[in-house]
Amino acid sequence: MTPVPTPPALSFAFTIDASIGPFAAQAAGPLGQRLHIPIVGGEVSGPALNGRIRAGGSDWALLRADGTTLIDAHYTIEAHDGTLIYVQSRGLRVSSDEVLARLQAGAPVADDEVYFRCAPTLEAPAGPHAWLNQRLFIATVRRTPTGVQLQVFQVG
Image 1 (cartoon, rainbow, N blue to C red):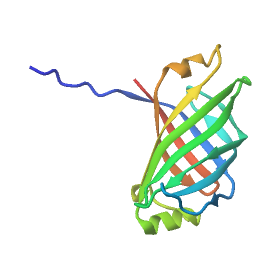
Image 2: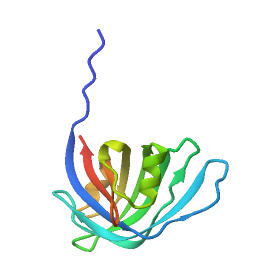
Image 3: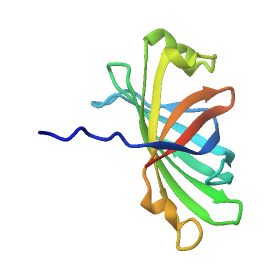
């Protein structure tokens, strides 16, 4: 008899409210159209982590020919105690062409109109935040008027 798999538990860890600057798009290449989306700041708050996002990060999103966007964001969180934490978030954004056009124009989009998820990986130095190196996280993502919001959950 095959044992029934036990699904992992999720616990809310923190919210990331990232501010983004105007994006630049290059001409489509063999993999799709590469977007450069600057990450210019933001806040992190929640039971597991609090701090701010330092300016200088980027999302090097890839808009594929099928309309799916591959997310590849790299940025730094400065925790409330000054610890610098490197973040890489990889994910997917899937929607209709009409919803994608609204997203790119900065117009509001309902959560049920788009599949927007990512898996942030955090890298922290030794000390009080080192536990972040030893956990997996997943996040729901939504576009906001000034950027994106991630609701980050620890996978148990």
